[in-house]
Length: 148
Image (cartoon, rainbow, N blue to C red):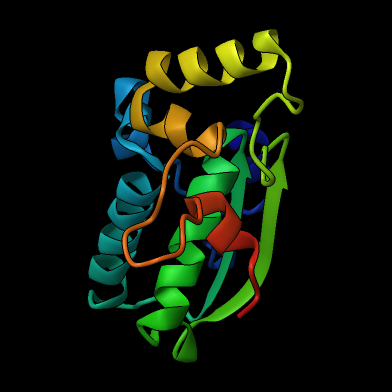
């Protein structure tokens, strides 16, 4: 996908395609929020440099879509998007509503519990097993889905 985007949107036409590597590999286990803050930190540094972008389009695949959703919310709350126009947010194959197995069966409970343990903090987010401090037992993905 990166290659195709670079071909379609070359630097000679004023575009910069970035594949955000600091969240690659095992860093994705750190959690949607931690990975999202990495994206925000990088973007804030980029916006303070020479020739900062005026428009922003982001594409996330799988967990990357959740990470970008979190990052965009944080950028909005920090006022960063007042100076940069968000053109496109696209999430491909992203479990925006989580990946918890529904139901009360023993298998569903077992799968949800062990999945959240096996894939660390990100797994807890995906299985809706986390609780965001200061909320009434709401998970991170539940808060991301709330427009308020």
